[in-house]
Length: 113
Length: 234
Image: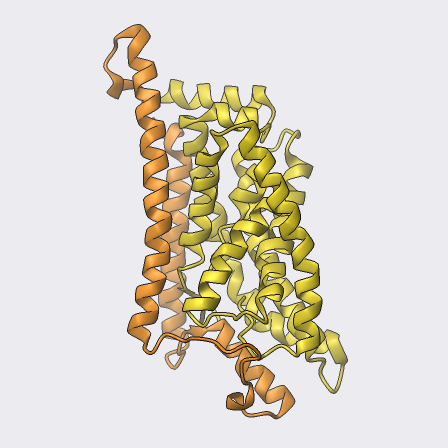
């Protein structure tokens, strides 16, 4: 049983370590802003070229979300689309497997998933 | 890994678009062929694509005090190869360019090259090298996914370094500087991504090994033995 769950345990420990690393970072660097690395890189380009950031104008005009709220809504939407597709496919695979397992033997399908 | 719209000189936008376009064309041809040969692979494409959508929307904090996002491309690269992955990655990046002001249409080529092409290509290379060896299947998926993630950011650093060589030390010196922002931030994220995708791969092996066999993702004996092992231990 435990052997079978080895990957889940590794994943759990990795995620916990990641959270621990984040907490440690906030303690070591209390002033860290956790801005996006894209933004940090853009700042660096502006520094290297000596051109203020607002002088970098889009080459192709671009719509930008008017606020952080709208931006995070659209990001959530992106993740939700992925989540729905994932749940649909995994759900149908599982049902398919269960139906096949139950048909010939007639055993309780819950035992072997 | 998004280069922001306006931050890449026009000449480099063109260069990266010219590299990206044939790869996308190749992906389109391969995708049509794969779906014609086996409709079932559409479901697997849905799963691997879903992870690109989900993981690339998660901006996670890292040790450098800034945030970055995983790419989720490893699983797709392993299952369908780098060109189809480039196509799926391009869809996500197009969405982000149009609606999120992450990247933009002129820099889209450069962003497709890093997240859709070079990252998956590195992951795919690692996977091909280990596919038939004794190396554990899940470890192979872990390594391929983590490196696909990391090399996406190495590529972004290189793209920016080529466009903005430092006055002292040139491309190499600014490459090191951009690596300091992107690659260092990415290491912990890449490890987490690798572990998560390895776990997802386990569920695919458990539920739908036949599709992995048909696509020859791993040798049949290896897949069947692993699937049996998981079922017996349950």
